[in-house]
Image 1 (tube, rainbow, N blue to C red):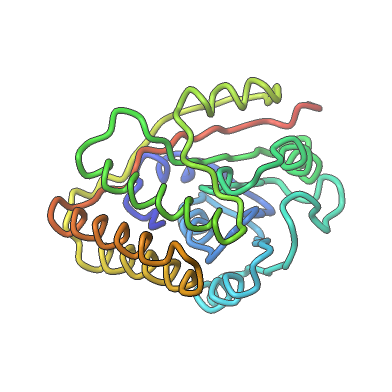
Image 2 (image 1 turned 90 degrees about the vertical axis):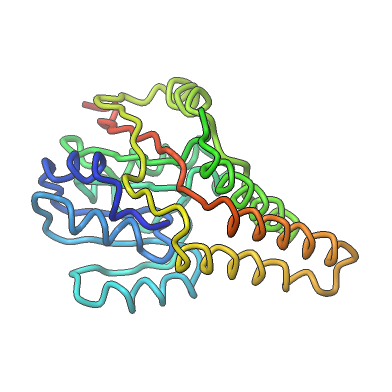
Length: 244
């Protein structure tokens, strides 16, 4: 996910003196880099993820930043209580099944005067271009579940609001924002998406469903190349630790 054209989110981050930062389930570090570029100030940063290959890429891409990378699960992080001023989770909520443990861990490592930022894509009131992204993303979710990796379909805005309410999180700011770019036929983005689909499908070569998913990938690629694609809207929650 490319965040640089999410202007509304960037304008909110520019007001934050982030202190010590952690990006939970940071993946390739795309959101972490965006956040560090956007914050008014920060002191140091950590990215944690269970995928070693993704962390290696993040380390390569963020070599100029004062960031440490840690291999570990979002459900059991190797940090002391109240270690970070700013705890972030972006577009990873739908990859994590146990939300109770996740939120408990994020609250545990957040300082009493800190904040938790949750940023998650949603699929509500889609444009034709965003519908293409939904097909792509839900296809990846289907493939990854087949390959043994938890990946649920995207939340709606109401589902996210209900989830936050269910766990009694202390939300101090909430807003919906989206990509400001209107380049719906960006060849670099389309090639990245189709390459990711094809890579996932290739992992099913010994599976009876291989040709079924290969054809599905080709159909989605045809749609994206014909109609274009636009990243979905996002819902962002800024949360204060409940013990304040």
